[in-house]
Amino acid sequence: MTGRADTDDAADDKGRHRPERPRTDYGGAVYGALLAASVVAGTGALGPYHRVGLVVILLVTGLVFWAAHAYSRLVGERDTYRHPTWAVIGRVARDEWPIFQAAVPPALAVAISPLLGLDLEGTAWFALSVALAEQIGWAGAAEVRAGGSRRRVLASGVVNLVLGLVIVILKAFLHEH
Image (cartoon, rainbow, N blue to C red; front, side):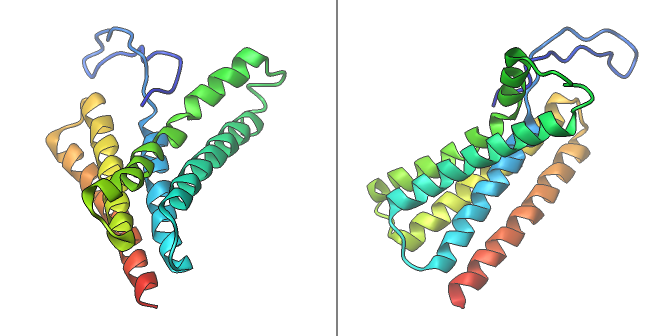
């Protein structure tokens, strides 16, 4: 996931200068993956659906939330962006792009599910699993990139697993009712 166009230029824990490197918006990726998981879980409550419909819902929802986040950031940081230029708008849009990018793997999971012989219910669980694995993976990657200890990487994984399990429980509950 790429995002934030600026660079990570900071000192490490001992005050030494770290080299510049492009920043990755792990928060947007984690959020987008959780959003995709929610979309998959929510569609199960609507009854039978077509795979193409779920792919479209995932991608359109990702696009809408990406645009909403970019817009809300421009509005919310109005004191910073008093007169936003096209360059600023483009940078903010790129910064928020990982929200949309996170919808792509679950959408691809849905698209390839017939090749795996999955029925619609199996497709939904497969897409949900992909979204949750992505969410946990990006959260762990953020901790590793930030130099977090093993304990912090594990804690991040557990927190995201719990968030994901809430979605799994919701899907199971909606499927039964």
